[in-house]
Length: 77
Image (tube, rainbow, N blue to C red; front, side, top):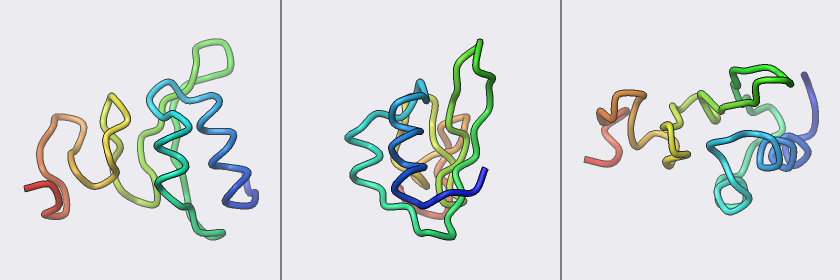
């Protein structure tokens, strides 16, 4: 889906299990930015990456840890 960054942030905050409004408000999304999700309408949605950085299972700050909790991009060390 292609849309305005703010519209994507609002939809993700309302639908994704691991991203809430506070997270979306604190992490801007450029108009050319990408949010990758997994799931389906009947199963629910989970954010896998926000602007190219991994998002942890509990909606951790992008870039702080990968899916296994390891440090990504040297951030969060």
